[in-house]
Amino acid sequence: MAQIIHIPTFSDSRGNLSVLDEAVPFPIKRLFYIYGVDNSARGGHRHHITVQVAICIKGSCTIVNDDGNATQHFEMDSPNKGLLLEPHDWHVMTNFSPDAILLVLASTPFDANDYIFAPYQHTA
Image (cartoon, rainbow, N blue to C red; front, side, top):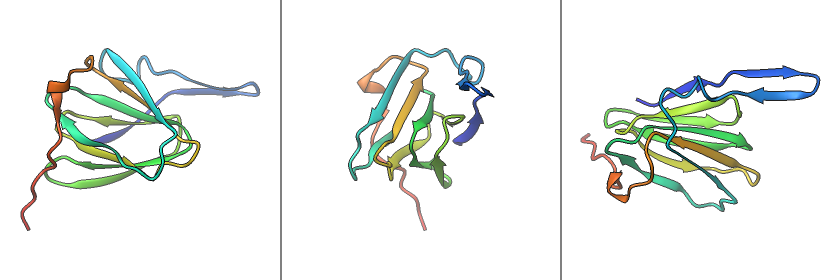
Protein backbone atom coordinates (compact mmCIF):
# COMPACT_ATOMS: atom_id res chain seq x y z
CA MET A 1 0.00 0.00 0.00
CA ALA A 2 1.28 3.47 -0.86
CA GLN A 3 2.40 5.60 2.05
CA ILE A 4 3.70 9.09 2.70
CA ILE A 5 7.33 9.31 3.79
CA HIS A 6 8.90 12.35 5.44
CA ILE A 7 11.92 13.85 3.72
CA PRO A 8 14.31 15.39 6.28
CA THR A 9 14.55 19.13 5.70
CA PHE A 10 16.93 21.55 7.33
CA SER A 11 15.80 25.18 7.43
CA ASP A 12 17.44 28.40 8.45
CA SER A 13 17.41 32.05 7.39
CA ARG A 14 19.07 31.12 4.08
CA GLY A 15 16.36 28.67 3.02
CA ASN A 16 15.68 24.95 3.06
CA LEU A 17 17.76 21.86 2.29
CA SER A 18 15.97 18.53 1.86
CA VAL A 19 18.01 15.32 1.94
CA LEU A 20 16.81 12.23 0.08
CA ASP A 21 19.59 9.69 0.56
CA GLU A 22 18.33 8.20 3.84
CA ALA A 23 14.63 8.91 3.25
CA VAL A 24 14.35 6.74 0.14
CA PRO A 25 14.24 3.05 1.15
CA PHE A 26 15.97 1.68 -1.96
CA PRO A 27 19.02 2.40 -4.14
CA ILE A 28 17.98 4.93 -6.79
CA LYS A 29 18.53 3.59 -10.32
CA ARG A 30 16.43 6.13 -12.25
CA LEU A 31 15.02 9.57 -11.68
CA PHE A 32 12.79 11.76 -13.80
CA TYR A 33 10.48 14.70 -13.38
CA ILE A 34 7.13 15.66 -14.86
CA TYR A 35 6.18 19.30 -15.42
CA GLY A 36 4.18 21.55 -17.75
CA VAL A 37 1.19 19.21 -17.47
CA ASP A 38 -2.12 20.41 -18.91
CA ASN A 39 -5.40 18.89 -17.66
CA SER A 40 -4.18 15.41 -18.61
CA ALA A 41 -3.68 12.53 -16.21
CA ARG A 42 -0.22 10.95 -16.04
CA GLY A 43 0.78 7.47 -14.91
CA GLY A 44 -2.09 5.01 -15.10
CA HIS A 45 0.00 1.94 -14.41
CA ARG A 46 1.72 -0.25 -11.85
CA HIS A 47 4.89 -2.30 -12.08
CA HIS A 48 6.11 -5.86 -11.80
CA ILE A 49 9.20 -4.96 -9.72
CA THR A 50 9.87 -1.20 -9.63
CA VAL A 51 9.43 0.72 -6.37
CA GLN A 52 9.09 4.51 -6.65
CA VAL A 53 8.99 7.65 -4.53
CA ALA A 54 7.11 10.64 -5.97
CA ILE A 55 7.84 14.13 -4.62
CA CYS A 56 6.12 17.29 -5.79
CA ILE A 57 9.11 19.61 -5.47
CA LYS A 58 7.11 22.62 -6.69
CA GLY A 59 3.39 23.29 -6.84
CA SER A 60 0.97 20.46 -6.23
CA CYS A 61 -0.79 17.46 -7.72
CA THR A 62 -2.97 14.57 -6.63
CA ILE A 63 -1.89 10.94 -6.82
CA VAL A 64 -4.69 8.40 -6.80
CA ASN A 65 -3.47 4.95 -5.80
CA ASP A 66 -5.19 1.56 -5.99
CA ASP A 67 -3.41 -1.41 -4.43
CA GLY A 68 -6.07 -3.90 -5.50
CA ASN A 69 -7.90 -3.64 -2.18
CA ALA A 70 -8.39 0.07 -1.56
CA THR A 71 -8.16 3.38 -3.39
CA GLN A 72 -6.40 6.31 -1.74
CA HIS A 73 -5.98 9.97 -2.74
CA PHE A 74 -2.76 11.74 -1.81
CA GLU A 75 -2.36 15.50 -2.07
CA MET A 76 1.26 16.10 -2.97
CA ASP A 77 1.86 19.71 -2.02
CA SER A 78 5.17 19.90 -0.18
CA PRO A 79 8.75 19.14 -1.22
CA ASN A 80 9.43 17.45 2.13
CA LYS A 81 6.72 14.82 1.57
CA GLY A 82 7.22 11.80 -0.68
CA LEU A 83 4.81 9.08 -1.72
CA LEU A 84 6.29 5.58 -1.60
CA LEU A 85 4.70 3.47 -4.35
CA GLU A 86 5.18 -0.30 -4.23
CA PRO A 87 5.13 -2.34 -7.47
CA HIS A 88 1.50 -3.43 -6.97
CA ASP A 89 0.31 0.18 -6.54
CA TRP A 90 -1.62 1.22 -9.67
CA HIS A 91 -1.32 5.00 -9.68
CA VAL A 92 -2.43 7.99 -11.68
CA MET A 93 -1.36 11.62 -11.20
CA THR A 94 -3.92 14.40 -11.74
CA ASN A 95 -4.78 17.99 -10.80
CA PHE A 96 -1.33 19.40 -11.52
CA SER A 97 -1.00 23.06 -10.58
CA PRO A 98 0.43 25.17 -13.44
CA ASP A 99 3.81 25.39 -11.68
CA ALA A 100 3.97 21.72 -10.57
CA ILE A 101 7.19 19.74 -10.84
CA LEU A 102 6.83 16.09 -9.79
CA LEU A 103 10.14 14.31 -9.18
CA VAL A 104 10.06 10.50 -9.30
CA LEU A 105 12.84 8.26 -7.96
CA ALA A 106 12.79 4.63 -9.10
CA SER A 107 14.49 1.45 -7.90
CA THR A 108 15.14 0.15 -11.43
CA PRO A 109 16.21 1.55 -14.79
CA PHE A 110 13.44 2.01 -17.37
CA ASP A 111 12.11 -1.27 -18.75
CA ALA A 112 8.93 -1.22 -20.85
CA ASN A 113 8.23 -4.84 -19.81
CA ASP A 114 7.94 -3.79 -16.15
CA TYR A 115 4.73 -1.80 -16.76
CA ILE A 116 1.19 -3.09 -16.19
CA PHE A 117 -1.36 -0.66 -17.63
CA ALA A 118 -4.60 -2.48 -16.85
CA PRO A 119 -6.20 -1.17 -13.65
CA TYR A 120 -7.46 -3.59 -11.03
CA GLN A 121 -10.93 -4.98 -11.65
CA HIS A 122 -12.94 -4.54 -8.45
CA THR A 123 -16.09 -6.47 -7.76
CA ALA A 124 -18.96 -4.72 -6.04
